[in-house]
Length: 136
Length: 138
Image 1 (cartoon, each protein chain N blue to C red):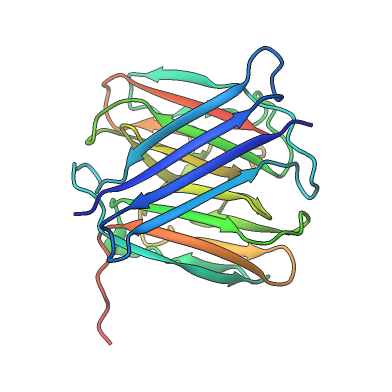
Image 2 (spheres, rainbow over the protein chains, first blue to last red):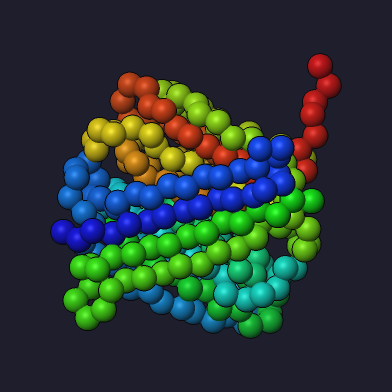
């Protein structure tokens, strides 16, 4: 087992009178036990220049298993108007779950399964690079 | 507008043998397609039970708008989890202590985010930082 720590901070001085200050760290474990996760896809990146739907993470080929997997994805561009749609399903049929504009990131639990890959669809043909990692 | 920052880090000294795993990033939470900060928030704690329930109800007000969802399972029993779905599609399970952060786009009003506890009742903290929600008439 390994010790892997995921930490988020959400901070704002002016979204409310008292601001916002959320900080949370969690040690990532396998499903249902206190054993740390032991596998990762490794940090990878893919660059797209098409508005076609493509597989970012293939559940089977990337061998993401277990019921406590987590996925990190970041849009490394700097555009505030262009985005990449992130979906679950297949390239032919999927459900949009998120939009990542330039600089945006997401960290989600991922059950996956047959026909439940992570699909990316850029909003334009301009080049965009996604960084991603699965951990399980 | 408000200035809200989301920071993330993922670290391990022993997952990989060749080098430590160390990822960190941050971003400002902006309105969709703009350089204007998000200025609406809901933050609180709810109780998930074994019935699938909306934690964020997608509305047409939110279609193609920015909606950042933070969720954490506050339980401590490692066997407990909450299943999270988006638009009736299972995203994954948040076991005790797990958190998630998702820039959900409500493609349509069916894109509700739901939670369902594996057993009993489980405390969930959430924050929904967003734009575009109008109050409904009484």
